[in-house]
Amino acid sequence: DVKVTQSSRYLVKRTGEKVFLECVQDMDHENMFWYRQDPGLGLRLIYFSYDVKMKEKGDIPEGYSVSREKKERFSLILESASTNQTSMYLCASREAGPYEQYFGPGTRLTVT
Amino acid sequence: DAKTTQPNSMESNEEEPVHLPCNHSTISGTDYIHWYRQLPSQGPEYVIHGLTSNVNNRMASLAIAEDRKSSTLILHRATLRDAAVYYCILLSGNTGKLIFGQGTTLQVKP
Image 1 (cartoon, each protein chain N blue to C red):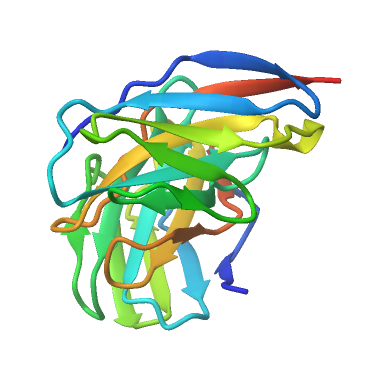
Image 2: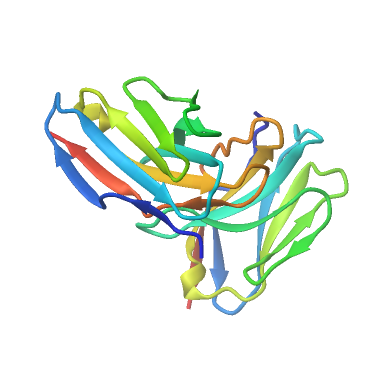
């Protein structure tokens, strides 16, 4: 079974803190993605990566950055967390091509 | 990115078939039709995908119209565990991004 794991299920941070959300997949997938999900707004794509050290902006990249130093790991970074970044964050991975995408369980981040 | 249109909600009775429709009139030749579902408090889960021909797997069937402007996800016997939000998404073979809409919330009544 494909496994996409995220470092935390729940996280509470203070405004202005630097936050790292880690995602690891064990299926050697080329593509990895970060989404956030908010009530009424659905899932929105933040960043994605097609290969190591490559990154592409999604629909809402402002306030976020990403890092992909190894194929299996894709990190989402909030340089200075703000309360409007309180959300559910979902990581996903997929083999190169139009194939099924696998999601992690999500990290519920609260910024106070 | 081509968009899809789904009903906001649907209801079904347990052990009956469910047909979830999706319209995608602006689909392009390289777009694959993907379906995902999301159970409460979980990440989305892949259900099925196809390009032109109908597809079957252990979870569901996907019926694709001949002109590809619409498709239907078929759950053959709904169970209470099938209650979820179902998303129909077009995945472009070129850009490869899954862009989620609002989906259809399926309620299954015992």
